[in-house]
Structures are given as structure tokens and as C-alpha cells.
Length: 161
Image (cartoon, rainbow, N blue to C red; front, side):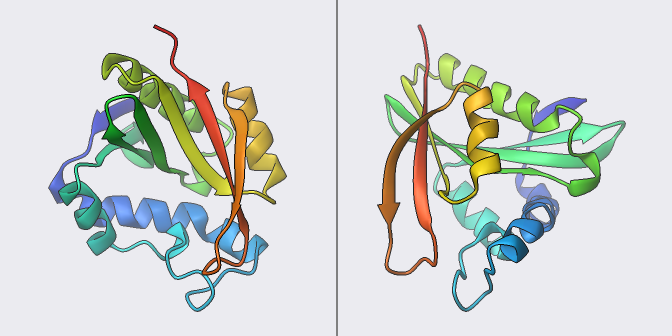
């Protein structure tokens, strides 16, 4: 497996990976373009371009030359970073790719001198919560947003220096 920083030319590919990788979650929680239009399952290349323009960095994972996953890194301030858009195409799951992408962002955060790495997930997605806990993340605040049909659970990873 190889993880490389994505480039602008990869926007269509990244959007496809993010969308395809999150379709099963949308189905599981009954999400659609009307009740959760910003859910990753509806990701477009325009979203990726906008995120790159804001300074977010994407990393692309390949397995034997085949694109199989991606993850994004956003740093809103010197001490905080967000792990965004972690996505592994279904046929490549359960091979350690998601964990490798998370570790890549942890290492990138360390090198960026970040103290806290944060992610927001669907609070009711207990399987995903448990998976992130195994990666070293700890449960944080639970938030309800009027525009979302689910609660958001924030999880944190403390970067040790």
C-alpha cells in the first residue's frame, strides 16, 4: 500500500472514493440529499476543490496501483487539526487501509506540531465509534444540529510530543 498527497487533478477520483465509501452509511441511517445534503455519500469534485482552496490536504491510498481510500487533514489553528473524509472503498475494507490512513494523519499532525486531532462522526454509529477508539481516539462532546437528522459525536486523539 502507498499513501501519497493528492493533487488538484485528483478531485474527481477523490470525490468518487468519498461518495462510494459512504453510500452504505447513508443507507444504514436513512440519509438522503434532502435530509443530509452535506453527507459524504453525496460528495462532488466541487466539494473537494472548495476544501483544497480552504487549505485542506488530501491523501490518497493505493493498493497495487489501484486507488482504494483517502483521508483529509485540516488545521484551523496551530494546536488543532481535523481528520476529515476518511474513506475506504468497500471492496478494500478490512485490510488495514483505514488504520494506515489514520496513522498517516496522526504522523502528519505530529510533524505539524498539532496537539489535538479531532473527528466528528454520527453518534449512533457505534461500530465506527468503537473502531476509532481502537485507533486511540477518545469520546468527546455530543452535539445536536438542527439541520442534521443525527447527533454528532466528536472524538479526539491527543498528539504526544
